Image (cartoon, rainbow, N blue to C red):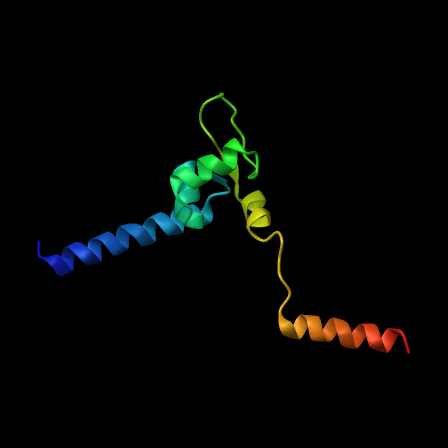
Length: 96
């Protein structure tokens, strides 16, 4: 197998992993790494500090609920300039 074939196979494997992770509702640490792009050590750090929601049903293996992870990833959202401008327009219109 030549280098180009190897690269194509690696990319296909990565795509397959991403597709499987996106379909699953319960994620393992490996799934979470692929889903978020976070490193393994960062995930364990978040778990250790109870920053990220997780389950540990057997006392050993970590599981993450995808919708909770999505909420976690979208918290502390920053408004865009256009959203801030619209809020200002709405506020000034309401106070007149």
